[in-house]
Image 1 (cartoon, rainbow, N blue to C red):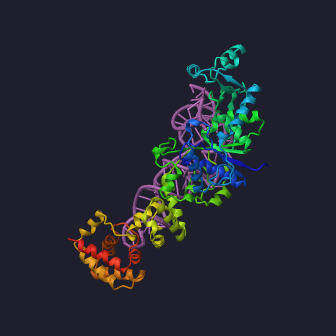
Image 2: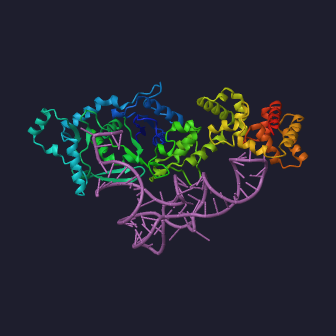
Image 3: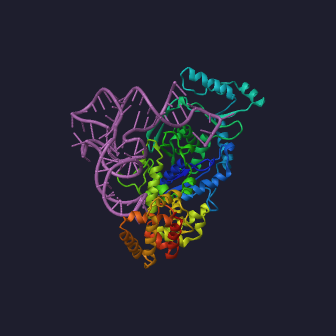
Length: 480
RNA sequence: GCCCCCAUCGUCUAGUGGCCGAGGACUCUGGCCUUUCACGCCGGCAACACGGGUUCGAAUCCCGUUGGGGGUACCA
């Protein structure tokens, strides 16, 4: 059995779509599971959509989620560059061979003629298949056309009959009748080869054994199989993954919210959570386990277990899973990630890494994304910003002054560590005969400026006696 | 129009003829815990698209219908 070689072949059209990452992930997992090779190839076939910086972005996005590649463009790395357009001479040479052997032919039909033909086919209820007019033109007519400088494309001559049987790794046998295919264009009139031609040549040349890609490419498989056969190359196994949709069952797009990995990274998601979540879109190990480390995924992933039906991207579940991963992090690790994240957002609190580390225990169970940290902890890094609505809540209480004074007095005499602080505050409640939530609520607003905040005792302890008392005093004097 | 794929709770799914009066997770929801918010714990709502077969027996196999999706380009 030959070693497994898979590839991910995105076109550089912009930020890498989350669906693209899912495709890359499955192809990568399949290679890694079998100890094979994973190739990254940039398919910049269509020059009109070329987007150089997108090549960098694609690599950065893959690297961020934890997908590495053995061959292909590397960010300053040693990997051989696979940029499809650089292989143009080889593609055109194959086209030349096909032309010479009669497996391909020149077509001078104009787009208008072709469109009219399709229209007629459709109206007649027939499958629209190219009429092969140029294949039946007499030689002198062809020569005249060529001499006149009429633009031409090169078409592959598809068999008149027979079926192409694709034994798909996720769908089983799928059959296509060649008679329904039509001779497709392999080289455009401008001399640029098409995707359906170039893609199988590259896969053959790179000895790809398993083509793992989206289901949108299933229909083009027979056209590509023909190219492998023409090349005399082995036809790889195909695995067509179910497509990803938004909540409205339409293909995932911008209007569904975040669709690029970058957006999730910038929203404070963890790469391991994103990878885990994406792996579960179409694949599952059993009826229990949902949390998988990168290594477990590699060990357990089997493409044969991929579910063939399309999946809807559930952002809620990703958010939940991100929280699970966040809570599972070592405190030092979480702190480091927070500092890096805050730095990337330009937050000034990134400049206080020790402080961030001290805050971690207070919020690790409360936040679901790195982005939520600042909202909870900003009061520990600088002056309080009183939330007006929160302030209303305590200002409206006629006992507010009494509450704050008593709390202040209790704290003033407390030994400054967690338990004595709690004891002092609880003592204040008993002294006034109020429920803890009443007094704690008032102190919380004074200290944090908000009604929703990290644990009060921990917050007060971290803030220090002086600052805590100052904040309570400030709130006290702001009372009317 | 024609070709192809798909079809279990709202969502992701387990299920490969009897273990399923269908299991797990997210969401929603009732409760507990509790200084807020979370976390955690306990409980609840909620599905085999429909119709025919095959079989002693079907969510599981076959056919059809319906629905959804993809393709049908000198896009990929």
